[in-house]
Image (cartoon, rainbow, N blue to C red; front, top):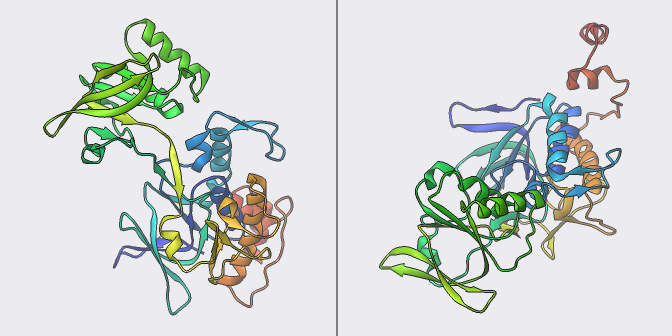
Length: 360
């Protein structure tokens, strides 16, 4: 099978569109690849790894088979290395908006940025849903969002010479406060309590920058914005000592974390139970033939929200998808330890195996 773009209408033709680039979505690529199927992945986040990377990149995971301990980032890196032979393509920072079944049984899939696919199947591996940034939640903030209030940093150099206030106490807030100390005129991190949720090493870096008078830390809660007409001038912070302080700011960077939303998935005609998609336990197919769901986003009797469970679901779904795309053709179970076909797909076939396959 192949994954190509139609030059005529710029529609990408592929065996599968995987919604979500977290661990289960990545492993789904592997299982499909072993069966000769290609996939494109779409994720609302700007980087690969899903909530593993976005929420706990440095926290240890202990229940991945044969891997005594790895972080969310390390697990993602290992999975990316594993799927290299299969040439999966990623479409990040966008969400799948519409999924329409065509007369030929394939799916017309479109994203929020206008990317379109002609896909044989759709696999939802979206964890607990698409992630959206938690808003600052103070009056008049909406009119500054996308301008003086941002929820992501695209280019640190854009903050050169500016007074920057970073809100939050997790990894993203800490990381960017440290990075921007080399670019901004001033950096103040505001967090509601003295303890941080981020990596201890990054906290130490920020505290060192504070001691060098290159950054500062303020414990308190943002109560309102300070405005001059249509210009944001700063914020009022109710500090831990009970005093309200005005903090000057040219730019607010808000890292209050992410919250999941099913988003457009809720409009695809799927059987949804308490924000989870019902599937069978043979194919992990939804009530819509050709649409599958693996990982935390699905539900069935006995469901356990574990990464290793999602890996199992991806394996069974792959075989079902192969049968769906090639009806009437028997799908044989082959082992990566001995199968020349698997070795060829993995890029590890010996010369003898290559010759054997050519002569078949």
